[in-house]
Length: 202
Image 1 (spheres, rainbow, N blue to C red):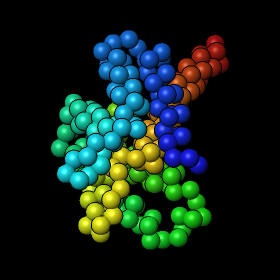
Image 2 (cartoon, rainbow, N blue to C red):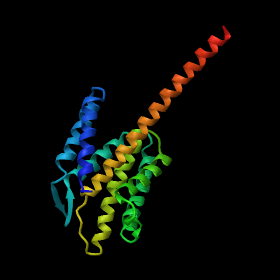
Image 3 (cartoon, helix red, strand yellow):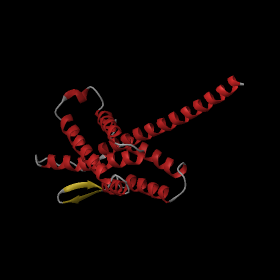
Image 4 (cartoon, rainbow, N blue to C red):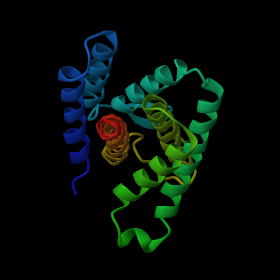
C-alpha cells in the first residue's frame, strides 16, 4: 500500500465530519483548521539541528499538547503518554529485527496494539486521542534519535507515521460510535421492557 494514502483518505474524511457533522462552535472551527494544517504541511519539511521534521508533525505534536493541557487528570495522562511513547519505540525497533511483520501488515498491527493499551489505561474519547497523539509523536522523535546514533537519518513524521496516526484516530472513532450505539440500544431495550411490564400488569 502506498505510504500516505490512508493518511489523506482518513484525514479528509475526518475534516468533512468535523466541518459538517460536529456541533457549531469554537471547538469545531479549531479542529477543522488543525486538520487542514496537518494535511497541507504533510509534504513540507524543515531541518532542526540536523533532524528533518515534517511541518505536519510539529502541528500534530503542538495540538496534542494543547488537548492534553485541558485534561483534568494532567499528570496521569502525561504518564500514560510516556508509556505509549516507550511502547511505540519498542514496536518500531522490534519490527526491524523480527520477520513476523512480513506475514502481516505492520501498518495495522502497531495501531491495534497502541489502541488496545490506551483503552485499558484511559477513558473518554478526547483523553484517549490526546494520549495517543502525544505518545506516538514523542515516540517518533525518540526513535529517530536512536537511529541517528547509528548514523541512520530518517525524516521525523513521514507518511508511514501519519498513516498510523489516522488509523489510531479512526479506531477510537469506531470505539466511540460502538459505545454510543450500545448505550442507545440498552436504553431502547429498557424502555421496551418497562412498557412490556406495564402491558402485562394490565
